[in-house]
Length: 322
Figure: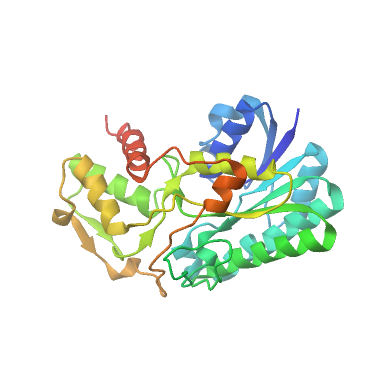
Protein backbone atom coordinates (compact mmCIF):
# COMPACT_ATOMS: atom_id res chain seq x y z
CA UNK A 1 0.00 0.00 0.00
CA UNK A 2 1.44 3.37 -1.05
CA UNK A 3 1.58 6.05 1.63
CA UNK A 4 0.68 9.67 0.84
CA UNK A 5 1.26 12.60 3.21
CA UNK A 6 -0.57 15.90 2.74
CA UNK A 7 0.28 19.24 4.33
CA UNK A 8 -2.92 21.21 4.61
CA UNK A 9 -4.93 17.98 4.61
CA UNK A 10 -7.87 19.78 6.22
CA UNK A 11 -8.19 22.39 3.46
CA UNK A 12 -10.44 22.39 0.40
CA UNK A 13 -7.92 20.60 -1.82
CA UNK A 14 -6.61 18.42 0.96
CA UNK A 15 -10.03 16.97 1.71
CA UNK A 16 -10.83 16.08 -1.92
CA UNK A 17 -7.31 14.75 -2.47
CA UNK A 18 -7.64 12.54 0.61
CA UNK A 19 -10.92 11.09 -0.64
CA UNK A 20 -9.43 10.31 -4.05
CA UNK A 21 -6.30 8.71 -2.56
CA UNK A 22 -8.27 6.53 -0.14
CA UNK A 23 -10.52 5.36 -2.97
CA UNK A 24 -7.36 4.34 -4.87
CA UNK A 25 -6.01 2.28 -1.97
CA UNK A 26 -3.46 4.72 -0.55
CA UNK A 27 -2.71 5.04 3.15
CA UNK A 28 -3.10 8.75 3.90
CA UNK A 29 -1.63 11.00 6.58
CA UNK A 30 -1.38 14.73 6.90
CA UNK A 31 -0.26 17.83 8.72
CA UNK A 32 -2.88 19.93 10.51
CA UNK A 33 -2.15 23.42 11.79
CA UNK A 34 -3.71 23.98 15.20
CA UNK A 35 -6.64 26.39 15.34
CA UNK A 36 -8.02 27.98 18.49
CA UNK A 37 -11.50 26.90 17.33
CA UNK A 38 -11.01 23.15 17.32
CA UNK A 39 -14.38 22.28 15.78
CA UNK A 40 -13.51 24.29 12.67
CA UNK A 41 -10.01 23.04 11.94
CA UNK A 42 -10.93 19.56 10.67
CA UNK A 43 -14.58 19.89 9.62
CA UNK A 44 -13.74 19.12 5.97
CA UNK A 45 -12.15 15.79 6.88
CA UNK A 46 -14.16 14.67 9.92
CA UNK A 47 -15.92 12.07 7.78
CA UNK A 48 -12.50 10.56 6.97
CA UNK A 49 -11.20 10.49 10.54
CA UNK A 50 -11.10 6.69 10.82
CA UNK A 51 -9.18 6.33 7.55
CA UNK A 52 -6.37 8.84 8.02
CA UNK A 53 -3.58 9.71 10.44
CA UNK A 54 -3.02 13.37 11.26
CA UNK A 55 -0.16 15.19 12.93
CA UNK A 56 -0.18 18.68 14.41
CA UNK A 57 2.42 20.92 12.83
CA UNK A 58 3.19 24.05 10.87
CA UNK A 59 5.27 24.70 7.76
CA UNK A 60 7.28 27.37 9.55
CA UNK A 61 8.20 24.84 12.26
CA UNK A 62 10.54 22.44 10.46
CA UNK A 63 10.84 20.18 13.50
CA UNK A 64 7.13 19.36 13.26
CA UNK A 65 7.54 18.41 9.59
CA UNK A 66 10.57 16.25 10.43
CA UNK A 67 8.68 14.47 13.20
CA UNK A 68 5.66 13.73 10.99
CA UNK A 69 7.72 12.45 8.05
CA UNK A 70 9.82 10.19 10.28
CA UNK A 71 6.70 8.74 11.86
CA UNK A 72 4.65 8.29 8.68
CA UNK A 73 7.40 7.38 6.18
CA UNK A 74 5.53 8.56 3.04
CA UNK A 75 6.08 7.56 -0.57
CA UNK A 76 4.23 10.65 -1.82
CA UNK A 77 4.08 14.14 -0.31
CA UNK A 78 1.60 16.81 -1.38
CA UNK A 79 2.55 20.26 -0.08
CA UNK A 80 -0.79 22.07 -0.14
CA UNK A 81 -0.55 24.11 3.07
CA UNK A 82 -0.39 27.87 2.50
CA UNK A 83 -1.65 31.31 3.37
CA UNK A 84 -3.87 31.09 0.31
CA UNK A 85 -5.89 34.31 0.26
CA UNK A 86 -4.48 36.74 -2.31
CA UNK A 87 -6.17 39.88 -0.97
CA UNK A 88 -5.09 39.13 2.60
CA UNK A 89 -1.49 38.66 1.46
CA UNK A 90 -1.31 42.46 1.04
CA UNK A 91 -2.26 42.82 4.72
CA UNK A 92 0.11 40.04 5.88
CA UNK A 93 3.00 39.98 3.40
CA UNK A 94 5.66 38.76 5.82
CA UNK A 95 3.50 35.94 7.18
CA UNK A 96 2.54 34.95 3.63
CA UNK A 97 6.21 34.75 2.67
CA UNK A 98 7.12 32.75 5.77
CA UNK A 99 4.43 30.12 5.18
CA UNK A 100 4.38 29.90 1.39
CA UNK A 101 8.05 30.46 0.59
CA UNK A 102 10.12 29.33 3.55
CA UNK A 103 7.48 26.77 4.52
CA UNK A 104 7.94 25.05 1.18
CA UNK A 105 11.71 25.24 1.63
CA UNK A 106 11.32 23.54 5.01
CA UNK A 107 9.35 20.73 3.38
CA UNK A 108 12.01 20.18 0.71
CA UNK A 109 14.80 20.25 3.29
CA UNK A 110 12.96 17.70 5.41
CA UNK A 111 12.42 15.46 2.40
CA UNK A 112 16.10 15.73 1.44
CA UNK A 113 17.16 14.70 4.94
CA UNK A 114 14.50 12.11 5.83
CA UNK A 115 12.85 10.58 2.76
CA UNK A 116 14.76 11.62 -0.40
CA UNK A 117 13.12 8.86 -2.46
CA UNK A 118 9.63 10.27 -1.87
CA UNK A 119 7.80 12.00 -4.70
CA UNK A 120 6.77 15.57 -3.87
CA UNK A 121 3.97 17.71 -5.27
CA UNK A 122 4.34 21.47 -4.79
CA UNK A 123 1.12 23.47 -5.03
CA UNK A 124 2.07 26.31 -7.37
CA UNK A 125 -0.36 28.95 -8.58
CA UNK A 126 -1.52 30.86 -11.65
CA UNK A 127 -0.98 34.01 -9.55
CA UNK A 128 2.72 33.58 -10.33
CA UNK A 129 2.03 34.77 -13.89
CA UNK A 130 0.55 38.02 -12.64
CA UNK A 131 0.38 40.64 -15.38
CA UNK A 132 2.14 38.43 -17.94
CA UNK A 133 -0.08 37.03 -20.72
CA UNK A 134 0.97 35.46 -24.03
CA UNK A 135 -0.21 37.12 -27.29
CA UNK A 136 -3.05 34.57 -27.62
CA UNK A 137 -4.42 35.58 -24.18
CA UNK A 138 -3.29 32.38 -22.46
CA UNK A 139 -0.76 31.58 -19.77
CA UNK A 140 1.19 28.34 -20.05
CA UNK A 141 4.33 26.70 -18.68
CA UNK A 142 6.58 28.91 -20.84
CA UNK A 143 4.84 32.22 -20.05
CA UNK A 144 6.99 34.75 -18.19
CA UNK A 145 6.09 35.17 -14.52
CA UNK A 146 5.51 38.67 -13.14
CA UNK A 147 3.39 38.29 -9.98
CA UNK A 148 1.45 41.30 -8.72
CA UNK A 149 0.72 40.27 -5.12
CA UNK A 150 2.72 39.10 -2.09
CA UNK A 151 0.91 35.78 -2.51
CA UNK A 152 2.03 35.41 -6.12
CA UNK A 153 5.59 36.39 -5.21
CA UNK A 154 5.70 33.87 -2.37
CA UNK A 155 4.45 31.10 -4.64
CA UNK A 156 7.03 31.99 -7.29
CA UNK A 157 9.82 31.52 -4.73
CA UNK A 158 8.43 28.11 -3.77
CA UNK A 159 8.08 27.13 -7.44
CA UNK A 160 11.67 28.21 -8.12
CA UNK A 161 13.22 26.52 -5.09
CA UNK A 162 11.31 23.33 -5.97
CA UNK A 163 12.97 23.33 -9.39
CA UNK A 164 16.33 24.10 -7.77
CA UNK A 165 16.09 21.18 -5.33
CA UNK A 166 14.99 18.90 -8.15
CA UNK A 167 18.08 19.74 -10.18
CA UNK A 168 20.56 20.16 -7.33
CA UNK A 169 19.69 17.12 -5.24
CA UNK A 170 17.84 14.84 -7.64
CA UNK A 171 14.59 15.03 -5.68
CA UNK A 172 11.36 14.11 -7.45
CA UNK A 173 9.47 17.41 -7.08
CA UNK A 174 6.69 18.40 -9.47
CA UNK A 175 4.98 21.79 -9.63
CA UNK A 176 1.26 21.82 -10.31
CA UNK A 177 0.51 25.33 -11.60
CA UNK A 178 -3.18 25.32 -10.79
CA UNK A 179 -5.53 28.05 -11.90
CA UNK A 180 -8.43 29.09 -9.67
CA UNK A 181 -10.40 26.12 -8.39
CA UNK A 182 -13.44 26.16 -6.15
CA UNK A 183 -15.98 23.83 -4.56
CA UNK A 184 -18.66 23.68 -1.84
CA UNK A 185 -15.72 23.36 0.58
CA UNK A 186 -14.25 26.74 -0.39
CA UNK A 187 -13.82 29.27 2.40
CA UNK A 188 -16.58 31.89 2.48
CA UNK A 189 -14.11 34.79 2.09
CA UNK A 190 -13.17 33.72 -1.46
CA UNK A 191 -15.07 35.42 -4.26
CA UNK A 192 -17.00 32.42 -5.63
CA UNK A 193 -18.21 31.35 -2.21
CA UNK A 194 -18.90 34.98 -1.27
CA UNK A 195 -21.16 35.45 -4.30
CA UNK A 196 -23.00 32.16 -3.76
CA UNK A 197 -23.50 32.85 -0.05
CA UNK A 198 -24.52 36.46 -0.72
CA UNK A 199 -27.05 35.52 -3.39
CA UNK A 200 -28.61 32.91 -1.10
CA UNK A 201 -28.79 35.42 1.76
CA UNK A 202 -30.72 37.73 -0.58
CA UNK A 203 -33.01 34.96 -1.83
CA UNK A 204 -33.93 33.98 1.72
CA UNK A 205 -34.39 37.55 2.93
CA UNK A 206 -31.39 37.84 5.21
CA UNK A 207 -30.08 40.89 3.34
CA UNK A 208 -30.76 42.87 0.17
CA UNK A 209 -27.26 43.81 -1.02
CA UNK A 210 -23.96 42.16 -1.81
CA UNK A 211 -20.84 44.34 -1.65
CA UNK A 212 -18.20 43.42 -4.23
CA UNK A 213 -14.89 44.71 -5.53
CA UNK A 214 -13.68 44.63 -9.14
CA UNK A 215 -16.28 42.93 -11.36
CA UNK A 216 -14.07 43.16 -14.46
CA UNK A 217 -11.42 40.69 -13.30
CA UNK A 218 -11.32 37.48 -15.35
CA UNK A 219 -10.39 34.10 -13.91
CA UNK A 220 -10.16 30.53 -15.17
CA UNK A 221 -12.29 28.68 -12.60
CA UNK A 222 -12.40 24.89 -12.20
CA UNK A 223 -13.49 22.39 -9.54
CA UNK A 224 -11.17 21.28 -6.75
CA UNK A 225 -12.27 17.66 -7.15
CA UNK A 226 -11.10 17.67 -10.78
CA UNK A 227 -7.82 19.40 -10.02
CA UNK A 228 -6.83 17.15 -7.12
CA UNK A 229 -7.19 14.16 -9.44
CA UNK A 230 -4.63 15.85 -11.70
CA UNK A 231 -2.25 16.18 -8.72
CA UNK A 232 -2.25 12.40 -8.26
CA UNK A 233 -1.68 11.81 -11.96
CA UNK A 234 1.23 14.26 -11.91
CA UNK A 235 3.06 12.45 -9.09
CA UNK A 236 2.46 9.10 -10.77
CA UNK A 237 4.03 10.34 -14.00
CA UNK A 238 7.40 8.80 -14.80
CA UNK A 239 9.36 12.06 -14.45
CA UNK A 240 8.89 15.24 -12.38
CA UNK A 241 7.23 18.00 -14.37
CA UNK A 242 5.92 21.56 -14.09
CA UNK A 243 2.35 21.46 -15.37
CA UNK A 244 -0.50 23.97 -15.82
CA UNK A 245 -3.90 22.65 -14.74
CA UNK A 246 -6.86 24.72 -15.92
CA UNK A 247 -10.15 24.65 -17.84
CA UNK A 248 -8.84 26.95 -20.58
CA UNK A 249 -11.84 29.29 -20.28
CA UNK A 250 -11.86 32.67 -18.51
CA UNK A 251 -14.95 34.25 -16.96
CA UNK A 252 -15.38 37.65 -15.32
CA UNK A 253 -16.55 38.23 -11.75
CA UNK A 254 -19.53 39.98 -13.32
CA UNK A 255 -20.39 36.79 -15.23
CA UNK A 256 -19.98 34.82 -12.01
CA UNK A 257 -22.55 37.08 -10.34
CA UNK A 258 -24.90 36.83 -13.29
CA UNK A 259 -24.85 33.02 -13.44
CA UNK A 260 -25.37 32.57 -9.69
CA UNK A 261 -28.14 35.17 -9.34
CA UNK A 262 -29.94 33.98 -12.48
CA UNK A 263 -29.90 30.38 -11.25
CA UNK A 264 -31.62 31.56 -8.07
CA UNK A 265 -34.19 33.62 -10.00
CA UNK A 266 -32.61 36.97 -9.16
CA UNK A 267 -31.16 39.89 -11.12
CA UNK A 268 -27.64 40.64 -9.92
CA UNK A 269 -27.81 44.30 -10.98
CA UNK A 270 -30.56 44.87 -8.41
CA UNK A 271 -28.39 43.70 -5.52
CA UNK A 272 -24.65 43.94 -6.24
CA UNK A 273 -22.95 47.17 -5.16
CA UNK A 274 -19.28 48.13 -5.54
CA UNK A 275 -17.18 48.85 -2.47
CA UNK A 276 -13.63 50.07 -3.13
CA UNK A 277 -12.33 48.41 0.04
CA UNK A 278 -12.47 45.06 -1.76
CA UNK A 279 -10.12 46.20 -4.55
CA UNK A 280 -6.51 44.99 -4.40
CA UNK A 281 -3.64 47.53 -4.23
CA UNK A 282 -2.54 46.11 -7.59
CA UNK A 283 -5.26 44.37 -9.59
CA UNK A 284 -4.72 41.24 -11.65
CA UNK A 285 -7.11 41.61 -14.59
CA UNK A 286 -6.84 38.33 -16.51
CA UNK A 287 -5.95 34.69 -15.96
CA UNK A 288 -6.62 31.95 -18.52
CA UNK A 289 -4.61 28.75 -18.56
CA UNK A 290 -3.46 26.62 -21.46
CA UNK A 291 -3.44 23.10 -19.98
CA UNK A 292 -2.69 21.28 -23.25
CA UNK A 293 0.58 19.84 -21.94
CA UNK A 294 -1.04 18.47 -18.79
CA UNK A 295 -4.05 17.04 -20.58
CA UNK A 296 -1.87 15.16 -23.04
CA UNK A 297 0.85 14.08 -20.61
CA UNK A 298 -1.49 13.01 -17.82
CA UNK A 299 -4.58 11.97 -19.83
CA UNK A 300 -6.58 14.40 -17.69
CA UNK A 301 -9.79 16.26 -18.48
CA UNK A 302 -11.99 18.29 -16.10
CA UNK A 303 -15.48 16.92 -15.54
CA UNK A 304 -17.05 20.16 -14.26
CA UNK A 305 -17.85 23.25 -16.32
CA UNK A 306 -17.99 26.79 -14.96
CA UNK A 307 -21.78 26.54 -14.60
CA UNK A 308 -21.91 23.05 -13.07
CA UNK A 309 -19.22 24.08 -10.58
CA UNK A 310 -21.38 27.01 -9.43
CA UNK A 311 -24.52 24.86 -9.31
CA UNK A 312 -22.68 22.35 -7.12
CA UNK A 313 -21.74 25.16 -4.74
CA UNK A 314 -25.25 26.65 -4.74
CA UNK A 315 -26.93 23.31 -4.04
CA UNK A 316 -24.60 22.53 -1.16
CA UNK A 317 -24.67 25.99 0.40
CA UNK A 318 -28.48 26.13 0.13
CA UNK A 319 -28.81 23.19 2.54
CA UNK A 320 -28.00 25.64 5.33
CA UNK A 321 -31.22 27.53 4.57
CA UNK A 322 -33.63 24.59 4.22
